[in-house]
Length: 395
Picture 1 (cartoon, rainbow, N blue to C red):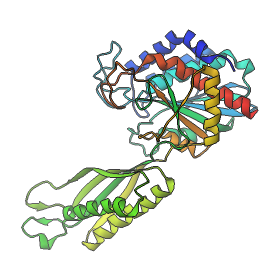
Picture 2: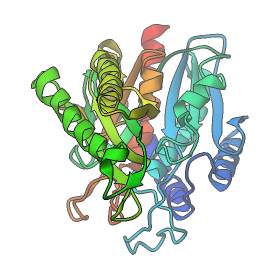
Picture 3: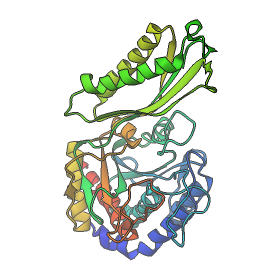
Picture 4: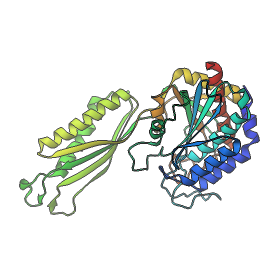
């Protein structure tokens, strides 16, 4: 194994330059023309021949011998629709912000691309680099970026045997790589419920069917699912963030709307609760003479870390960087559409601490978050080590 950390440190200035350009030009969803063009040009400058699997939004490039086993490295490129409040000299001013660190993810993978290209003749297989859109699920499309890349063929030609990704986080100490075997993130389903009753005058409720009353009963009934139908040892979240209906004090509306989120750490529990939520909403509405239309929007499965692959990558990381990895004592509290990848091929999703002690101690998606650029070479070396180590052990 090469000393990838030393090599990545030698190109730190370029990785930082990439990160700052990306940070200053954030784009959202599938609308990533500037980001995609920048990443594509950087890859071409290294000698790659990147392809746009999603026009203007998703890139793939390969390095090494495509006739041998192929390992995929993934980075997400999209930002959030949020005004930045960091006062950094390269802060975004366009109403969008890389508040989840995807600018670091992309620049670290570009750094790894250079490291792998430098040693292409010795690479014991093929590495596929995937730069995807819409991890943040801000596009109106119901298909998330990772799934769309898979549908576009990112796992084929050459066929991918295993994959890994990384996320910067405040939940791991700065400059340390965290790992966890098994389910490492929550699943996410947006729960969208439209209740239809019968409109009437507010003084003649007996002549209509009040959907607001129905909605209240549904909301309370859904809380009982957590209290009575899930194990207290299993993390499950079901919360409603939107409850709306009506236009005037003296009008019973025809419809009202609820929108919430279901999050689980078990695919079996997720599917069971989706069925129970639909049954409760529809049954409760029917009992009051109303109807309920229940939809689960932009579904995102749990991220499952293959234990054997995690062990391989930890060994490779320590060999390629000289650093020790940190075993996390609990899963990451967020979610990621890399989960779709993790249920398609053996995968690992690693966490890189990237908040310096003197920076604002805030969560991801916060407009004040400031990431530590000193971790960029470590992230690049981590990617290169992971791919190289897996290919060596799988040859």
